[in-house]
Image (cartoon, rainbow, N blue to C red; front, side, top):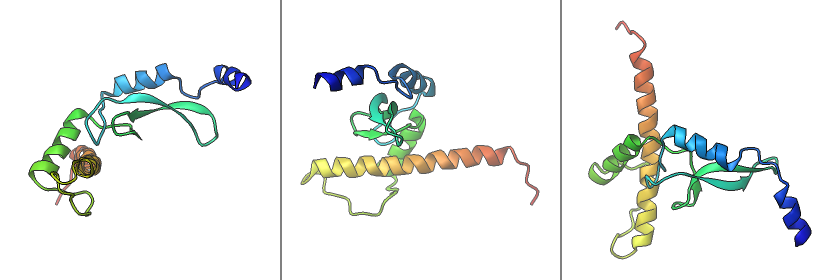
Length: 132
């Protein structure tokens, strides 16, 4: 056990906790599913090297996030306009609140990605002059 711990102390991280946190702070993004804060999560990359990735501790997922306004738009589309990113059956909120919360966060996360794509395309198209 001691040798393993000693080895862990000398690991060189691909992305340090500080660098990951600085990138999160610079982005100003929130979790695309719950709207919560993003934090550095320690992990190992595909080449088996230690690193930190941005993620949401509440949702227990890696996530680069979205701007808060995108999350809010997605939240409103799901809760007020009944948009659905995934067409699985909606759990009953009173009978199974945990399943409902997971379903709701998943829907909001999926719609957040769509809203982000729409805004990106809108900005891109606004820079092109189209003659119809």
